[in-house]
Image 1 (spheres, helix red, strand yellow):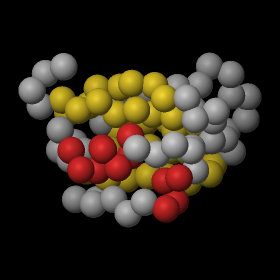
Image 2 (cartoon, helix red, strand yellow):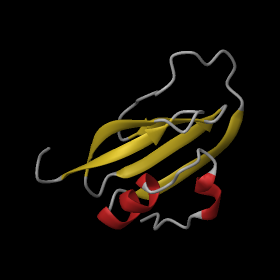
Image 3 (cartoon, one colour):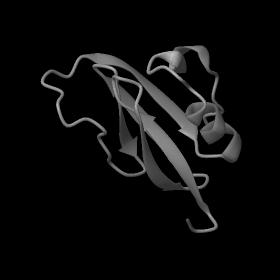
Length: 89
């Protein structure tokens, strides 16, 4: 991993984690579709290979700081994001 990269662990609907590398301080936008955390920004990444219908469950936005990424990566359930306050800018 490069010096200014962080590892983001995206979750699918079964709460299995998928590793994605993102640049530190990038704006992160994740759309939760049928329980899957789909990365929209700064790159596109969909951890699911079996979702048939996209039920919109919510969206997560934050700045990719070490603190915010650590909070996100510490989640254990796909819907834990509703309990976390992220620094957006």
